[in-house]
Amino acid sequence: MSGTLTVRPEDRDGYLAACRTVVAQARAAPGCLDFAISADLLDPGRITVLERWATRAELDDFRGSGPADEQAAVLLAADVADYEVSRTYDGAPLPVPTSIGVPASSALLSRGVRDLRDLTGITERELLSWHGVGPKAARLLREALAEHGLTFAG
Image (cartoon, rainbow, N blue to C red):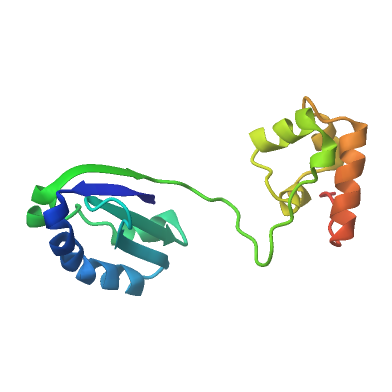
């Protein structure tokens, strides 16, 4: 979950102070990886919200009905979105080489491939069936995987 809340500038400090308890509760909750509510450095009426949870179920278990009535009363707007990250990896990112070309890069991005490790769950045959991915791109990806001790599935 990530986004912003808008309050009158004169209400921001009070709103943030009232959030201390919920931040502490969230960070102590099972599955909470990060939970932050903070003042924006440039806009005196803007508050940034960031939550990361191990699973959707743990987020749902923690989630209440929303802010307390006195907090909700000072909110002018809320723009918070829920994002699901399906894969995370330890260590530095292993970017897909740009040398595979724009059509192949677009094909990979449209299927959620943003890291070479994402390719280890598919076969080379499957990869070649994707519109925009030809033998040259497959070879370059196979070589890039091998450089990191990785292979396609199967």
